[in-house]
Length: 372
Ligand code: G6P
Image (cartoon, rainbow, N blue to C red; front, side, top):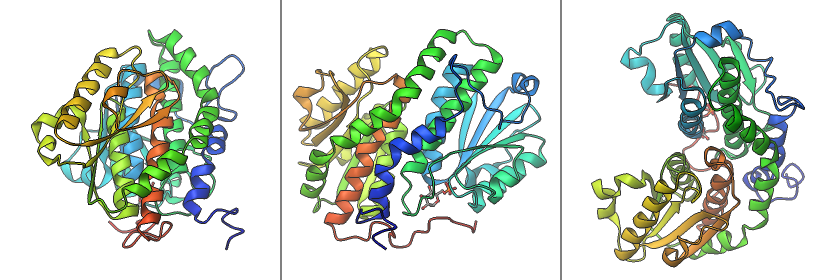
């Protein structure tokens, strides 16, 4: 009913709008006044966490994209090698697991069969399993050694939005917590990131306040066949997520690529006026990456692409090559997906609506896939 949707036309719109609160709720009570993480739910003891020599993340769909982003954070802040794998592939390739492996299973519903089977397999091999889950008491957390719940609230729309943002928050918390427990040379950076994380909900809100041009752009592209998404570093999984949203909702051919792979194939796809969304990394800090993305944008534009660039406020270098510019707030590099994903969700939702699709219940898809 309209009341259940809180005045929005679709659950998805309501859930997109709820993201600032979902992010804040997931942080609530997990950072103390001194800026330390207090994750008592992670019942795996400090001694055991110090012995972890490998993190393996398993998940499906949008949750898998959260895992891909988590890898950058975990390896950077903790120096523990981290693998991310689709749950459906993991179990069938005889993965190497033992008591020093921490397996992180990410699932909104907690009922996805592939993810469940992956974690059962991991536990049989002696690995510890930490679930990141949005549904209290569901099967995946019940079968795990510990669970860090995301507090997104119920997510009804099939395409995941607020659950994804809270999965990211939970992943950052796990990465920072591992860094804290084990001690790392990035102590100062971790303190800064924790501070930025506590402010990030307000930044997500700011992004939502500026989405009208994105909706307008989406409507203008309703008759396109293909949209490509490019990113580097954490922007690469964001590109994959942007493309997934468009497939799920708009039933368009959409593909995400690592921008560095352009010349190894994807650039052959570019045709006159084809929309290409580029997620630009921050021009600060890792400026090498930024220079590279600027030349990628130039390359595709020279071949006729219509460039849609998601870039930080104050990033002037991309302006000459952007046919459309979507501004996001300045954030620490690793946290950028929390703000850069939001315009891509809005874009897909609006494009789907413009094409006359049923946004909350896309054809052929289910909210929770309980078969392998
Ligand atoms: C289905 C949903 C996706 C979701 C995926 C994993 O395909 O349509 O939105 O990302 O399952 O679900 P989970 O509940 O495990 O996060």
